[in-house]
Length: 419
Image (tube, rainbow, N blue to C red; front, top):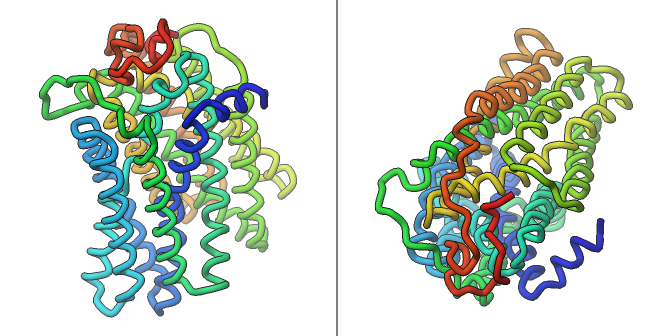
């Protein structure tokens, strides 16, 4: 298993691109907790903290596909680095002015979110040119999904350490400065500098004109909803147990399950169409969420949380392959960015729905939202099976694909268009 991942990381540029992307995305991954801690330190209420974090999240959801389209049109360096700098400046303004002017504070977080660089989508557009063979790209997608779990675990810890050693304002400044350095590392790399998207058909819908992509986005809205609801349900469960630390254990178990699932999924080659495989994985994901409604004791609940996480990273990794197959020519970065946006919007909806569910029916009901989200995602995939069965682009060798107009990859690789 480890040998396959090491083979990828030993490939020229691969480790740098993966590390730079993760570091560059650190501000986005830590923004909610950083904004909440900063707002509370400035004397703001939890309501204000939540509103500022929500404004940031909404702005990010709007900005990602727009910036992704700009990357497809103008290349990565011209978009990613300026966006990272502007986003960091937005957070710097928040850190420096505090809450003295609420309109200015809201404007600062909106700017920071709106200009969050689409590094995640950009990396997936680069993998085919860097890795060459289809099986290696698919493994890289799985490694990418696992690395995200690590970032979302380590990132909040880093914020809390910076807050305790320095201050919440300093944490905002340091995290965003690190993010700019990560983006800089990516855009200065050769693959990022030479990458060009394929010529695209002029269409105001861009990537969204693909029926298959729309079907996938619909499904992953509900996957995001399921995951978002678990964060609220976990807090409610911890309150029921009278131990705040229980929440941390549940989230850690969920992340551990995703790490294990993603590592195992990426360690082998999978036969058959990825769309069919995705339906199976999402079915197992939904099946893993349903037992959480039992809300047993802490040890059993922790084990159930780990089980619930096992199929998350494989579902995300498989979705990357499906996006690549269905994105219209010349829209690959935008298409990946839409997936990020839809997942994030779904997660926000999940947190919004799970709260009232706790009030109405207790903790079990809030976990039931996660199960319902998983089932809904599966139903969308089943209902759109015919659409998903017809990839939006014709398989082509890399030399003619949009991911490698320079013919840098090995001959015969189909850039993920043929399973």
